[in-house]
Length: 222
Ligand SMILES: C[S@@+](CC[C@H](N)C(=O)[O-])C[C@H]1O[C@@H](n2cnc3c(N)ncnc32)[C@H](O)[C@@H]1O
Image 1 (spheres, rainbow, N blue to C red):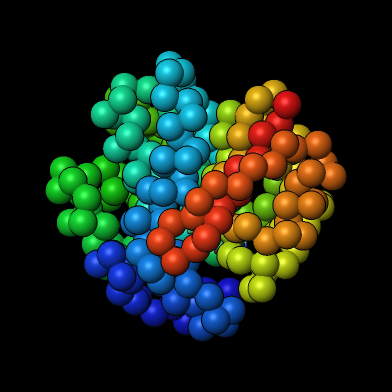
Image 2 (cartoon, rainbow, N blue to C red; image 1 turned 30 degrees about the vertical axis):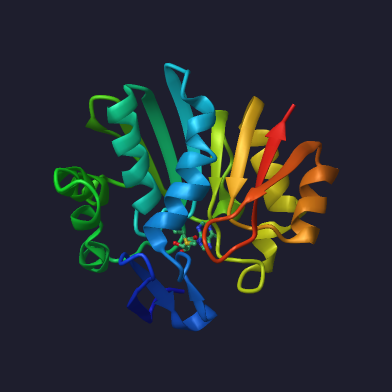
């Protein structure tokens, strides 16, 4: 799918990728790092700030930005994180490096970002003291979980570009992959998506979105 990728600057000074085939960006045009921090870290990860260990599943590894931010958070907060991320169409490493995320974050994150990108697919790799990653190369449609998770970063392309990602079969997989009281977070606030979540038994809440977006969604399995 990702044969024609173009790096674009977003409003917070961080880069994203524009995918011509789907006419879709990997992150918000209003700010890639800002969106990732707001949706996945502040409104997802912080829900588990008092835990000593967390397991996270990410749909869509993409550039590895969410994984990098999560790694930085794990080391600052000294919370052990096991991070599993699936990606059907890996972004070439040279393009990820051109995103230059470490220069916009903590410069010391440069080494960990390289390790993150170089981590072998299909293996559990220790990236730093508190962060372990398992990158899965494959489509979510083919994936079956042999482990349950506390938190899901649901970071598929939007419903206009990839409607099937926001429909019942994939969402049911996500429901089944969560522990009780587990949480799914996403930037998307589409009505039909939220109704689908509710029909599966999720408790659905809306939170203010990142700049440029009124709302985002958090769904709790309880
Ligand atoms: C919005 S981007 C994710 C951005 C990413 N989380 C980041 O931090 O850069 C959506 C990602 O989902 C991936 N994707 C698309 N279809 C998929 C599928 N069927 N299974 C797994 N990943 C898929 C895309 O290739 C893309 O990398």
